[in-house]
Image (cartoon, rainbow, N blue to C red; front, side, top):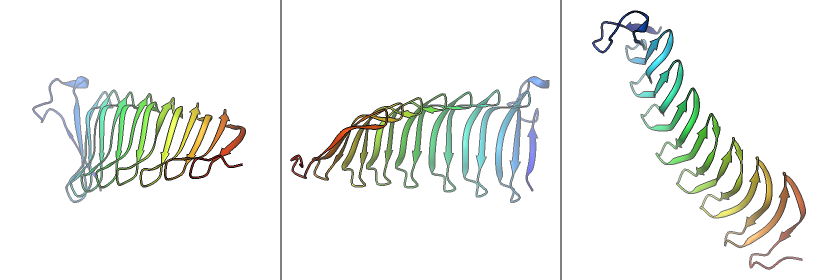
Length: 204
């Protein structure tokens, strides 16, 4: 059974009185360890927000304002390793976003605006090699995107517009020579694909 404790004027850092006071609440696991600590004002979450695993390791650390997530938030696993660092504005992801593998290397590096991916996006394999990279606009792929094999070798490069293939898409041999190329317009193929051998000679 969870136990909630409200810390009010008992704590020296609580100033003021009545409805204007910031009230700090705490909840505990049956083993007595802290599960969460959060502030409330006018019955809404306010100020620092923390959650913990039953082993005492921190799980979540962030901020609320007027009941909505704001600023930097950090999410951690049971061993205390960070797996997500992000920023919020009025309860929506906004700003830099990073997700990590359990080995500490970055899995995803992105940017959000009002909850939607916007700007540079890079995803990595667990050994640090890039898996894909490109740009989002309003949560849709836009511009040039490059995809890599597990050894870091580029194997596809495509152009997108509003989430659809638009422009030239190329596939590559492991030696970097273009394997084939195909043109697209609004997600539909245009014309015939050009296919090359691993020396770069156009196949007939």
